[in-house]
Length: 436
Figure 1 (cartoon, rainbow, N blue to C red):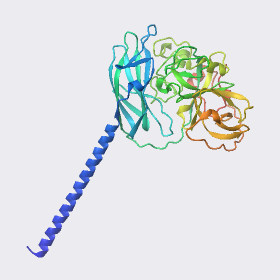
Figure 2: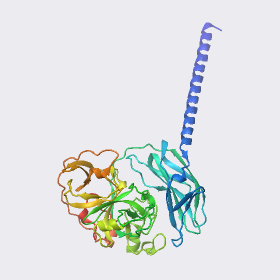
Figure 3: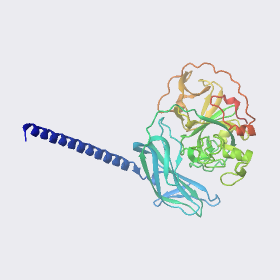
């Protein structure tokens, strides 16, 4: 073999060795990465402590959590156990749930999950599908589960444990343009039931400000305002948390679009099923339970909320579903606060906000007695009555609002209004809607 051949052979051997080393290094790196991914996935499996949950109409003990079904209340009584929030090691938009439970015929046991969204607010609760899968609307690094039990005294389910697994998000979290708060005109009724208990476990008093919506997807945990509405009549606006489920239905999140709405997706967005059942005979005029719908209600108001709005009878009102927007929110303290037309304690009263309500925190303006928070055009509350995660900016000088005139689409509750979907455009003055 010549010197040249020996040199060429040595070069080939060195090249092969280098390539082999590179492949081994790459293989080791992939193995490490996969192992890391496996550990992350394992870290995002958890079984919440049922004893630490917040219950409503359930009994929790060493054997798990069972529905506290009472005689005379039917066979579809609802019980909830809201579990502690869970921080994830990686963002997720897919949760797998599994229950270890005893579920007799006629009863159900399921799981809802919600995620904290990019703006810091909680998204709506999402029910698990029949396979126990939940798809969140956007990736989240903090999630919370809720056990949902239904049944009756002769068929009360018991859950011994719940296992949750968060899968890595299939899509990145992307900054979205600020969505406009959804707003619809619906028929409001007075709930009453003082001394009773709401779906989230609150015992109702005569002075409470809260509302009920016909879907548990927007049911706030007890004593929170995670889901808050602004309800306006012709004279006043009030802010209150969603603490109960109803009227009529319990799976009708009518404010959501068809691809999200849990039931009655064939109806126009913003149209409560009860409204169309009562006015047009939809579904034979019956609700989800087969009962005759006696009024078109899409929201129930607690007694104090009802009367403080100036209502003396059930009425059409304008409702803003505040959690559907993306602006910053602040939390009202443990006492209701008066809403005034200007940043001045002597300004006219134009509404109120109930305790724990999450209200818009647009900006701060200095009043004669200190800072005030602007929560909407022509609506202010003392800044000291509200807490927030990040202090709002100072308000810019505000130009006079233009005067607009809008054509009516039909009298409240008319067939013309029903078929128009009853949506009221955001930005319309409170005085054009509602009644009472």
